[in-house]
Image 1: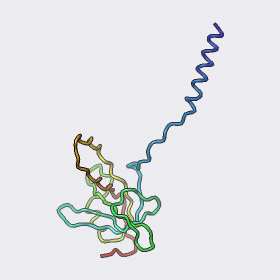
Image 2: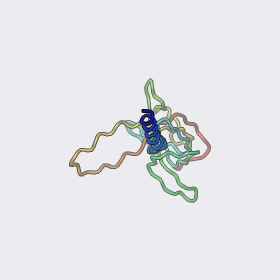
Image 3: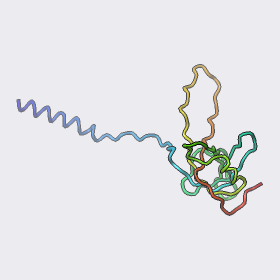
Image 4: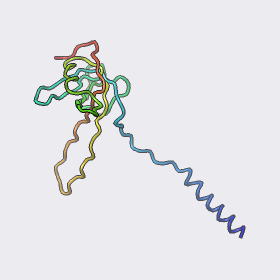
Length: 153
């Protein structure tokens, strides 16, 4: 009886050790919504019934967010990009509203951005042949301050 019990324990131990040594596969690197980025650029506002904001000629201070609308080299200064900004308003808003952003429009600013959480996407319709371009990632501004420098007109 002791031999059977000892053999069962040894077998279980031999099976458990390799399983315990397996490393879980790493999750894909996604930018969490709570991540914030600090950027220096020009705050532009487009006129319309609902004002739209964009941080242009932007350069990161530290880590750069993904989701640039237009990226391209400008002279020898490296990559400059534009980011679509989404104003927020309401009791539980974590970002700045349109009036606060409008006060800084046309100025060179240092802005703290946070990615907007995206709603779950609907599954593709079977048999659909049209391909949609993904919408640019949107960011909310949690803090903004004017810095020295001028923006192109």
